[in-house]
Each structure stands twice: as structure tokens, then as C-alpha cells.
Length: 437
Image (cartoon, rainbow, N blue to C red; front, side):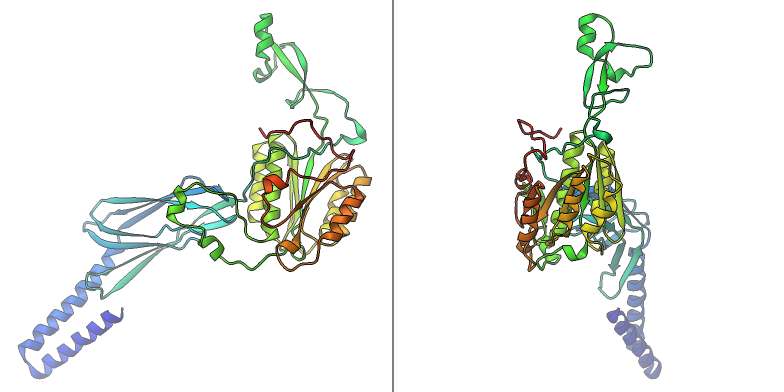
């Protein structure tokens, strides 16, 4: 723009000189400079008009450690060729480099490019807006046009593959763990019987049908295990982190890295990220085993996902964990006291926290006396940053007989989550490790 103003000033001076002197050379110079200014301004302005830009996400959801793909295209709907257009993207997703310079875009032509971003941070991110920038061949004018349309992508927290985690065993209210027939499909098959009209085809037991020559269906029993509730501590005073910035992600992002095999999951040095990842991992593990899982977290607001089964429940939990932050002001001890009163006897609780105090341990101990099965995933805050020692809380957990998984910064979560300290009689340990289906 400065060059354009300078050239326009020279054109005005040339017109003044021509008017004062009447010499043809000044008139020729004035015509030339005026023509260049008008032509350059029109050219720069035209380059950003008549363009159609589209962006298509392969999926609006991804996960930390996975690839988010987006395809962008630009089409010239004008009658003249666009010499060059810069498409600048202002997305908030770290490492998402969708900006591109398109040259020699003829009338009716379309250019496409694929952007593959390795997601390294959970959250809800904005894709867009786009800004089209161009200019004239002389570099005199620069013109830009804003395309305000935006889309949003949700990046779920990472999950690790667990081969084994102690299954918390609970009973229905009143201690009723007896076997009762149900018309619902459950993981427990009680036996078989003849088919009657109204039975679902997915209950047919085909080996028995083939052997007997008549339709045989399976009968199911109620699941004697109760719901599992994940209590995620999101109190701001209970979380600690070492100093880190966006450079932590930037130095691990690059086009060449997308084609390389990823190594082990590397989380930011923050107890908040470790806790969220552990909650997502345990939810996925238990849900794949057919258990009903719920989530409780007091962040900026009270977040409760009611216990349920299936992939849909996993999506609900991951959606909540994707955007949750440690901005709460309610300690875990108070959360357990407030929400634990609504839980029935035999319900299983997994408390995930980095709080070095012992108040929440007393709350877990109280719930266990009421018949609630308890397990703690305890993050050692002093390994992440300057924080009070966690020894007192860990000793209190061991003295209370509460099964505990102790996590430090840099631990392999898949390995450390399988090493839960168990007190006899509190957990039912299988003879062989369970594999998530």
C-alpha cells in the first residue's frame, strides 16, 4: 500500500509539472504513472474476487496421537487467470498448516490440497477463518479478503491399550448377586431354550440349532457386577505442572513426521493431562469389557456422565474429557462426599487425583464402609513440579487398604496402570490377564 501511495504521489506531481510547464514529457509521464496505478489496483482487487474456497473434514473428531485430515480446494469462477493467491488459514489447532500459495489459476480451474495434522493436544479447536491475499505483478498493491466461515474439530484425549486392570467387583443393592433370568442381552449366558415367536434373531444359538434341527435361542442372566464411576479431580489447587508452552507441541510437529512411525505417547508435564488420559483409558477399557461406566468431575462446572454401556457412552465420556480443564474450586473430598451419597451399595469408584492431602482418602474410606468398592489412581505431584510430598497420602491409602496405582511423570501408563497395589479381599483378581475386546 505504501508503494501505491508513493506512485500515486508521483503521478500527481507529474500532472502538476505538466500543467505548469506544458511539456509533453511530463504529460507522458503522468499518463504512464496514472495508468500503472489504475491497472495495478484493478489487478490486485480482481485477484481476490470470484474465488470459491471449500474445506472438507474427513471427520470432525480425532484423538491425541492420531491424524486429522482436511481437504481444501479453491476454484476460479472469474473469466481471467489469477496469477497468484495466498490462502492463509487462522485455525487454532496446533500444527495445522493449511495455508497455501496458489499460482496461475485459470478460469474455471480448481486446485486441491490435503492437510494431515498429527493431533497432540486435546480440546475443541477452530478451523478457519481463511484470508485470501493477492496483489499486482509490480508488487505495488496488496489486497486481502476475509472468508469468515469456520468449522470446529474436537480432539479426544489419548488412550493407551491396557491388557489388564483389576476388575472392581460390585453387587446389586441388598447384596443380591444371585443369578436371575432377563430378556436383555448381557455378557452372561444362562442356557438355551426353544425359539418362541418374538425372540430376536441375534439371540439364536446356531451351533445348537444345527445340532437339533430346530431354532434354539440363548437365555441371559443379569450382570452381577455394578456400575463403575470414575471420579476425576479437577480442582485447580490439586494439579501441578512444569513450565511448558506451545513450543512443546511445535517442535514435535512437521510434515516429515507424519510419515514416520510414532513412538510412545508423550504427554505434557502436567498432572491434569495425565489424569484426563488415565480417565479416558479406564473408561475405554471397562466399556470394552461390557461394564457400565460413569464420570464425575467438578471443573468450571459440575460434569456428570451417567453410567451406561457401549461405544456411544465412550463417545460421551471422551467428548467431556476433551474440553475439561482443571479450573474447579471444589476439592475431591467434597466431591466424593456430595456425589457418593447417591451411589448404591456395591458400586465401584475409581478416584483419579494428584491431591497430596489426605482428606480425599478419608472420604474413600467412608464410602468403602458403606459398601462402595474403591480404587485410587494417585499421581505423584512432586515428580511434575514443586509440590508437597505425596508420601502421606500414599501411606494413608495403604493403611486404609485401598488399592492404589501410583503414577509418576514419564511413566508408561500401560505398564504402570497394571501394577495396582491390592489388599486381599477388596478386588477379585482373575487367574489370567483380561484382554479388552
